[in-house]
Image (tube, rainbow, N blue to C red; front, side, top):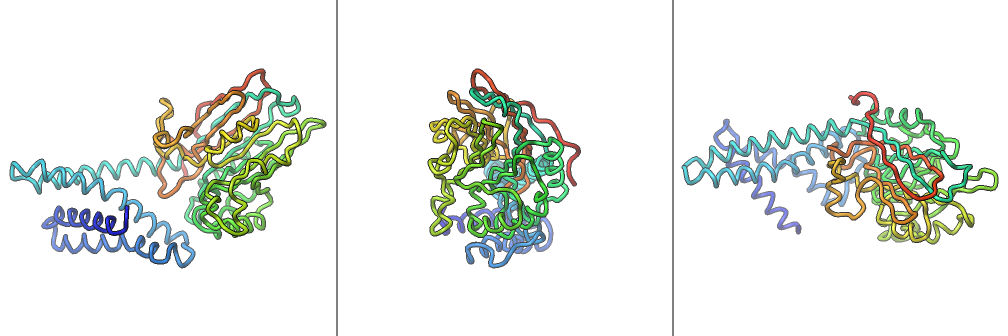
Length: 393
């Protein structure tokens, strides 16, 4: 949508709301106009400076950015319902009355859905996944990887929720912790919030982090510098972390992200390079890949990668797992859960945080515990999601 069309859309929507509200109380039209300006101003400022010209703290994100998103999501729903009601009631001389009634119903339903999504974003679950890997060395049979993904951490992220994430990972005592991209929200400065919340995570075979598209958008050079400075874990960008048990080897490979293909300069190395990522893998080693975007799985599978752990899709933050459907399934061939292509396996996490607004229905925030099993044939066994404690405040 071009800017003139978007402005026309806003004018139509807010004019409709003002007409529906007129006469409900003194100064209703003026109140709607003021609310329209206040709720649209953040977008105008963002477009004017192509981002925020300052670091947005927790209060700004909670009380300016988040209400903006809620309003923009509800606006077309309420406007559409109001216009439909006006058209339906017009032949009976009740256009305004029916329009107001349907707009009010749409507002109530929309608000209820957003509230349910908010509560869902706080319902942390844990899920066990077994990856049956042919040729896995006996020494690595039973190795566990705790996967967290798409945290999108910023100063506004609930600290109590992040403590539950940290405690859940720690309780499982995994051999490896894998953070599969989108660690932070919007800015390189958000790494400080990530470090404060999850910097204490430890695992005997390493805490591994890979870039996601939002880490790239935030300015990968600065993000990577801050990650390497503030955290003890290893940042993998088209690189491998090799585990050895006697003569047996297992390679954990981290890719770059497709968003990096548009990056110039020194940060361009964040683009995915499967050949480079696998170049340091010892001959004959079993390979587990960490790839934020599951679109990289076919290329990894062709190169013999046994298991790929991804995120990125969030399962659309709206899913019906029982039917294998998510909002992301409409757009992506590999959108959620487990997949198999010959001897190569893929698991796509729904993510542990959220993007935009705190909203998750059916695609609940997840800590995934993946166990590698030596087997005759490849298979991925995805267990049920189990609630972790009570909902965060």
